[in-house]
Length: 502
Image 1: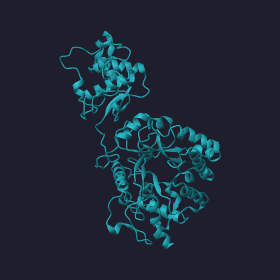
Image 2: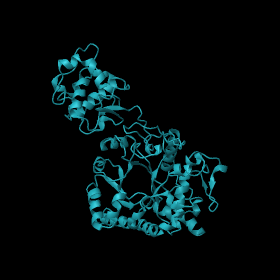
Image 3: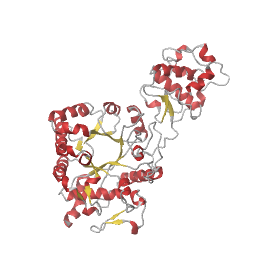
């Protein structure tokens, strides 16, 4: 065993040593106001995120990700696992519909078959390996197996006696699944997907694990955890769990399968029984995790070996069940506002962009077109927005629809009012977003107030308001989508409408 432990890092390095670690993000959808796929992609681009994991294979999301270069891991949901694991035709149809229909435009690089199946859906465990093999066979048939890896995410709870890492092993009751699974990953050049949550390890340790150790905070040498068998020092829980997984594989004679962490994060809010679910701790954990991963730090057992990691998660999911922490793992709220600003400063670093003040007012998805038109009429009339750029032949006329025109007018009003509270509602048909409206397709040379122009400077929204000497309310019929629909009665009732639309 001692010889095996010495050789293990060399074997792993030979397989994965040239890879550069990346940070990705999980995109959950249990939100009452889920952003549109286009808005999600715009946020990813703004935050330099080039790796994402979906919990399904949503067609609209895959289309929005097309031609972006973003690397995508799609998933077979647990509820589809039994069908796919028992039928070659079902697996082939799933790949045809969710992979072949989207590549190469959408850069799908991995398929996660199920999620934490051994612990969350143990009755499906007997067909798990079969499901992976059938999905892989369908990829082989389409010559996609070299670019798309197949694996399945595991909870770290399948590892027993995780400290010291050198003594860790997988729950023996799962050997009939884990052994063929690992051999499959080895033979296909894939990787073990592992969900690593130091938050839960800390919470369940009854104060044995120090908070600083869970959060990657610096520890004095006498506080570091030492593996007595290897004399390796562990300065954080994350590395200890990852190394425990490597050692667990080695006890099953698998020594060259790398690990990708498919979920890791820290909640920013919790119930009274979760006092360490705070914004400060979430920020500290995720900031330190990102720096740890992108520096290619590796682990004590495998220094310099990539441990690419997907942050859990992009958005707070308010529809998740209790406890409160379950709803608060996200880096952003549904409107794209950061829950906190990560402690990252390097230009171009993933999630390093502070978008706190880059806010816009846009038409809400699914809003009633008649309500949008009425609000648009108000913004370009009593709201004193200069809507001349919406004239036919002017830069913002296209796309010629009420959503695009109202978004321009709503945002112009919001910017000229200094983004003050209550100036982006318009009777419920508008919402605040951190997605630059100019990112949407079809706007041509139109520059939205508060957006970045072609020369990189911000357009001052206040300059778009009519001057104090302008007696026109700016309502020629041709300004608007189809018709102005403004009347003298609307002008007379301007002050009443202010209360209605704001």
